[in-house]
Image (cartoon, rainbow, N blue to C red; front, side, top):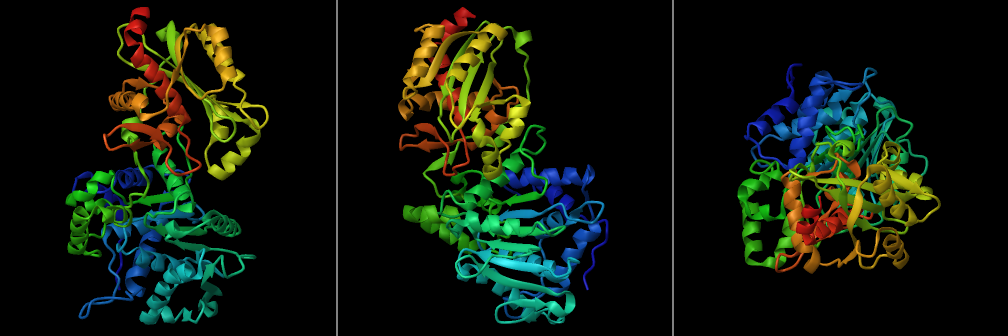
Length: 562
């Protein structure tokens, strides 16, 4: 029997080896485990319990068996360090009542890295070893064939393990532990089964990238866990080709959690644990030393020679590249690329307009009517200072706030409370509030509008009102295309990386820039796009970029003015 001593901590060991450069991981994994290591040393209402973490590791290695293994080798489960760290994180953090912190785990990893094994271990542990009477565990999908895959893997594991069979009866359509703890583990599909009356303790969601119209199923299962003290939704997937569905929504939510770490104004969900193994850049697929970022089991669980052969074939046949980078390296299949990483964007520097006393500013706007945000940007410089300072305001229709917070899981209500955003009465944006904000900047902050860049498709009456208020020399249209935006966007990116753009750590702008992808043509010209998710907003970046175009176009005149 394998036993782990209470001073063994796979999370700290894993992060230590990452820090030393012994293990290469994706940027998101690095930041997540940096946070977990910090959390262990800085407990809040949740603390790390080595006893609880070790319990799941010992369950896996003493009672679970591999359903497939090479001839002449043992079928005992022997977890690798990254797998131990993963399970310890999911199960090890508890409150003073012994209830788990993690209520939802999102585990994204390249295929053939053993995620089905981990999902089987988690499902069976929740069924009989989690101390939950009457545990109901479900492997769910939109189609029965998908739901059966992960459930059948767990069933094979039970059939291979005499110890598990003492507690679990493998039947045709369910795994029953009714004699032990009145529990059941069954596959469930929205196209075949009734989803009413579920009292879910564990919900296994595998390959959600294949789900079409998956949000409805996710919402039903998420509602089904509310009666349990420590339920767990366990999501495993590779990247996929179905866009604007549940995979993109959950990925974006996981990304927001990671980006909000160590940021007082960042997005918070203490019960969501994201594990995203992926390449940091699409270009890394040809760099063999980067493959492990998306494939933590490479060379042990996953055959490296096989992957090397796939990469070679893709280099020879470009038609194979999209599927390769999607399935093997977790780069979502879109026509766009991420613009900047979080470290490029993050800037905690603050400023006080009253101290800087700027006299002239340059504006930019991104207007909307209903779904998107409306943004107004004022950037300015001061003599003897190379930095570019950014002041912004956002607007959202008042009638949509509650719905957007609930459905998009974006903290618009918090941003409104903190003063980063304002509401407009009703269900539409009224552009008069944008004009009034620029007037407010002039009357209350003593910053006069020198130029204002706006989308040429902006509402005529908005442009006319701005002209009437600030003069006809102020407003200039900015064509929204690569010809106009490519060079300024590249310069803006360089200034953000150099920390020259000081935006008062505005969480809305930071979120918008994080959401921004770039559409690239064959000549490497770029323009911003918001990717595929309907909940991603880039309005703050769009307004900033229009203002930045004005700054570049009128830099000499502006510098002489200030």
